[in-house]
Each structure stands twice: as C-alpha cells, then as structure tokens.
Image (cartoon, rainbow, N blue to C red; front, side, top):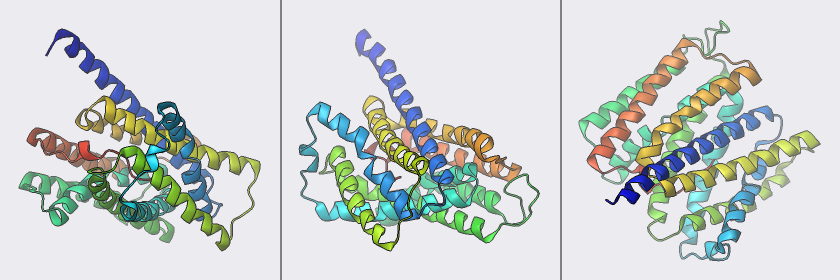
Length: 317
C-alpha cells in the first residue's frame, strides 16, 4: 500500500464513522418524534415517515443524475415483499416506541444481530459455531433481564409491567426478528439490484400502500403535528442516506460498533423530554445484549464471513 493510500484509508474510515453517528442521531430523533405524536393514528404517522423520506434521498439522486435509473428493476415482486415486511416491522417499532420508555425500545432493538445469526443458520444454512450461538444465548439472557416482570423498568417504583408495556416489549422483539428477515431479503436483492433501486421502490410502494390507510380514518392534524411528522420523514430519509454513505466510506466492521451509541442518545433524550430514568435491569441487561452483539461482530470480522458488509441498505424504519 502506498503512503497516500495509507493516509486516505484512515480519513475514509473517519468519514464512515461520522456518517454512522449521524445515522444514529437521525434515527433516535425520529423515534423521539414518533413518541411525541402518539395521539395520531399509526397509519398516518407511517405515511408521513415514508412519503417525506424521499426528499433528502431524491436530492442526492438528482445531483448524481440517477433518479430515473433508480426505478429500473427486474425484481418488482421482490421489492413488494421486502417493502410489506419492512412496513410491518416499522409499525411494530412505532408501537414499541409509544408503549415503552425510549431507552428500553432502543436496547431491545439491539437483539437484531442475534436474530440475524440465528436466521442465517436456520434459513441460509450458514455455518455458525458454538461461540456465536453462545453469544446469541447470552444476548437473549440480557433481554430476560430487561423484561423480567418482577423488576421495575424505571426507577418509578412500579414492580409490575403493565399490559401496554408487555405489548411494547413483544412488538420490539418481533420487530427485531422481522428486521433480521428483511436483512436477509435485502441480501438477496443486492445481488442484482442497486441500493438506490431498493430505496426508491421502498418509498414508492410504501407510500402508495400507506395512503390507503386514509380510508380507515385519519385525524385532522395541527400545524405542530404536521411539522413533527414531516420532520420524522426527513430524518428517516436522511438517516438512511447517512447509512449508505457510511457503508461507501468504510467497511461495516469499522463502523458497526458505533450504532450502540444510540443508547446514549436515547437515555439523554428520554430523560430530558419524557423524564425516563432507566433502571438497573435495563442498563445491566442492555450491556449484556450489546456485549453479545459486539462479540458476534468481532467473530464474523475475524472469520471474514461478516454478514454486515452485505447490508447495503438499512431496513425501515
């Protein structure tokens, strides 16, 4: 490697890390806005999230002259399948956000890599050694610590989980498992489709489907709610764009661990906006889940079989 290349690589890695942190900030802010507007019908929230996400993405495509080319595909059915599953997981994530304190929702999302490992072994027949299976088990033990009914989720003193919280926990875990399946679908799509094509069709199909939810009854919005919902969509789109730019600038093995900084942002926003204070079980269980995810990342990086670099696009939300 030349001296110039050696200097360029660290710079590229730093850009990748910066874009990854921007992605994390955008997603946590988006979830915070979703929690703030929990009195708006779910379908209406999801429509704004999907429809207005195209603004930052389309801006980049126009600058690159790739807007028309982004809609060329030979796998329309595959895009429909990926979008429908992605929308379902987005809805479950939003249900979780509205039912649970923000740090708990973010922490439960960290089970995603655990599901990816399990599903890769079960459905793709990938070789998963005893060490990674052990990490998966350790991570899910952390989930039990977080959700154990006899432990308080917050320091409020409540020793039992409410029905709303139980629904939120179930929604978060099902969403994490579903997003792992979305990763596998995207992994198949990127063999023939460009990342911009996957993004474009997710926007087109999701916006069209969610517009139909208006017939189920949308609530009239105040100016403040409208502004928050539009911001939610723009943040989601900009976050997705930052993820793509991060993957272009640096290998996912370099940037993946920075995704866990989302817990710090979630704790901060949860405390200052909603007054949420994570209990010891959330912090300890979250540390277990994070440790399991980092171990899996390290093992896959060493073995050269990491599935993360193949995730060309982050799934919704």
